[in-house]
Amino acid sequence: MEVRSEGLPVRCEKVGSGTTPVIARTRLQVWFIRVCSSILLWTGLVQLVAVGELWQPRFFTNITNKITQNTPFPLQVQVHAQPPPPPPPLLRARNYTSNGYLKVSCNGGLNQMRAAICDMVTVARLLNLTLVVPELDKTSFWADPSNFEDIFNVKHFIDSLRDEVRIVRRVPKRFNRKYGYKIFKMPPVSWSDEKYYLQQILPLFGNLKVLHFNKTDARLANNISLNLQELRCRVNFQALKFTPQIESLGYKLVRILQESGPFVALHLRYEMDMLAFSGCTHGCTKDESEELKALRYAYPWWREKEIVSEERRLQGLCPLTPEETALVLQALGFDKETQIYIAAGEIYGSERRLAALRAAFPRIVRKEMLLDPVELQQFQNHSSQMAALDFMVSIASNTFIPTYYGNMAKVVEGHRRYLGFKRTILLDRKRLVELLDLHQNGTLPWIEFAVAVQAAHEKRIGQPMRRRVIADKPKEEDYFYANPQECLCERTNCDDLLGPSNSSSYRENEHTIPSKN
Image 1 (tube, rainbow, N blue to C red):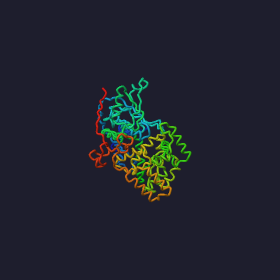
Image 2 (image 1 turned 30 degrees about the vertical axis):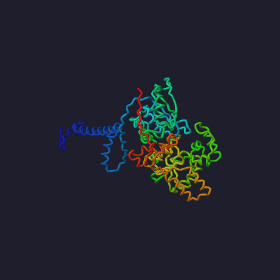
Image 3 (image 1 turned 60 degrees about the vertical axis):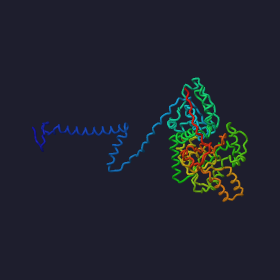
Image 4 (image 1 turned 90 degrees about the horizontal axis):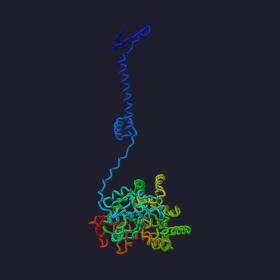
């Protein structure tokens, strides 16, 4: 029997003793299929999004962002930094037949090695050699286990100089000792110019495939051809970049300091190695003096002869003590509000020797005070990497003051000249020792002491000036890396900036070296 109810056909079937209406199966099946299909569709979409986030997250992130823009309640959306700009295109590699491989082992601290690297790139270019990425000093007092790639960005170093010099990471295997090849080692003569390398070193490659310079400090003269000087500058200011890890932390240090106002970077060279090397013990106890002497004798390449500390001090050959530095800074006009960053390692005598300086300048800070210990942990026991951080801060400081004119002071001075002659106060230690002794024995009143100190440094603030050239005495000339004048200005404008040049300031000769066939 069929009954109609509200326009819907209902079929009644007899069940037992009566009849029960049953809704048409076709309509129920349609709704059931729709519901199930919707559930499956949304489940599949959720699964697709989850898989897609792993496969190509940017595509789905864009979709999600469009959806969340219309959401009526706020969402915590993670903001991603802009992707770094693409690297600049590689320079066209210089096409030349190499005369051989030059392997070098740099000696000394970070800044001495930095200058040596610049010199060795220049020598390789002069002689048409292939340079092996330099080895860094691991045997001196500092005993730093860092390799080149731990301090400098080695890929940038190689790529940025490919139009001048071919640089490889290691000597080819065929020249290894296990293949029976013995590499000839030698130290080149100090302060040598192009003539030495052309006449004495280049002929060695007639029989040798590889030459190893086992010392590289000050092995190239201060004054050489202009094109080679420009290459030295290019290596120093462009090719030698620190690793991203060092740069990141160095920039953070600078940012923290700048947020507190202008700051002075004080290279307080009153560290154990400096005092032992120089034999300077002014202000030290008897036990400390003996300890420093024993350290000097323990290293054969340091001076083993007897050194009279006070004589060296009067000659201006000792770093200023922290106590002397406090008086000099006050005389120069710095007050208690001056923010001072100590760019140095562990001060000999620790806080006891820093007491007078800290009393005069309470806003003294060090990297260990500004950074979390975890951030510095990766650089612990790596003195050259720690020195790289101090180097970055010193370059960025409003004023840089070294208490000893060593390698770091000179290289930082040159960088600050290159950046626009930033203020660098180069202390006249010989004159200061005279004034300090007169003031401390009561002979020279404070006002007269301060006036004399300021007068002595009016022309020692890193202003433009020409490098001093002394014929036949290259060691006594002004250091190239402290004042790389050839790279500070256009050649047509150098006379306006630095003043008239003398005939020996520049060597214009170009050298073309034949390649080995």
